Length: 401
Image 1 (cartoon, rainbow, N blue to C red):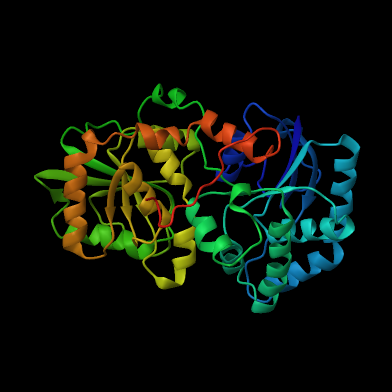
Image 2 (image 1 turned 90 degrees about the vertical axis):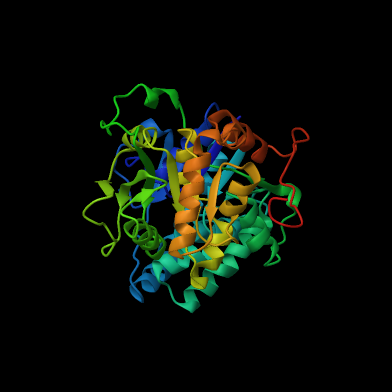
């Protein structure tokens, strides 16, 4: 069967979202429609693209509202009709929309208005409030999108989420009309992991006398990172008579704390380069906000960097609130150490425990959840609910019990 996936990822820039989709759809006949800031004239046939639609992202207050409203009034219905024409022409077995932008939400909302019997499935990476917060839209625009969003979820054949927490703490809590047996956890995956282990290491000096903790990604949680650095500075980066070295890969914030020694800042690297560095480290740092303003995001998201760490057999050093879904994951699968404090002594104690336990942590069960074949199999279940009786999302009474 051929599945049509409508997403906002850029096929000309292989980012986290595009890697997520390519691994998830592995072994499946998939065609793609892109709704992103890719010009319609860019050649993207190699991505199995049947069409693309332009949408400009703006994250400035007021301007963002104007941009979304203008798109809604001038483009959403037009794009909806074009996508419906493509669907009718090729008679796709299943259609999946990734609700990653206001544009896709508004287009799908218009499709439902045009054809109330339209059948589709939706995949959610981030909850709507997080998307609206990043775009800095007004309450009026948030409410407009929220009404369309709820109708979309309630009308979908199935819902793909990145974690149990996303369903439990958002969709179930807010009384969306979607049954648990139609909800599937679709996690990120890393393909062909063995190819990275054959590359020459980028961290060439010996780590025999060091314990390396790597962070890979965009650093949103600056307070947590700064607390980690400050704690290590207080002991000159020596814990249990061994030097601790922090390795930073990605985009730091403007005021991110980087001391003169103890931290290697490698900046932006490609996915393969990143994995190549990760495999030469001892643990992967996973910070999450302690701020209550970020509580919803913490409880509903599941970061892709966890996948990267586990794929290279690195235990997780989680640093954030206990309420986070990823904290429950680490505890359930015993795949690392959790530090739920910003206090120096607590941080240092957790690092000491991590150093002691790192080599004895069995990551096989946790890592198996992110294998390409596991994720691809789960996606097949997600898009084909009626074909055979599958195991769906079962929700515990408390997280990860």
